[in-house]
Image 1 (tube, rainbow, N blue to C red):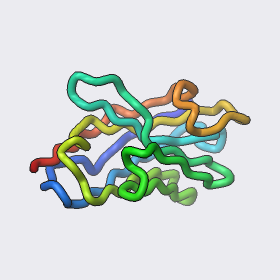
Image 2: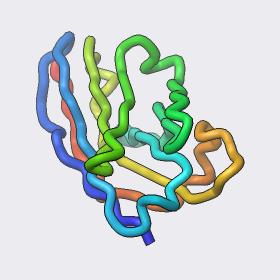
Image 3: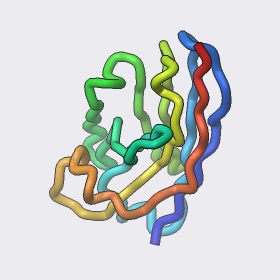
Length: 125
């Protein structure tokens, strides 16, 4: 099993920056991909950024490309999401996720089956 715990959410003004963290524990060496998902009020949860645990290949959706950066510290088993140029539409619950399904693109969002509890990000305009 894999356990994930996010931190770093909060309130920020539009145009500001925020950095989220996700601590992974358990069978971390078996993780193939990690990613960040967002769930805006009244909307379904959707993946926005992913990273492969071995190659480090990253993927971003168009909505966050150029503004968000995903990274992973293998030494501490911590996933990060650095967010800049935040917009009101970025207001959402942010979830860290992972899966152990090797051989798939990390942007295959339906593969993710380990989830953190989420951290709330509020961007005020």
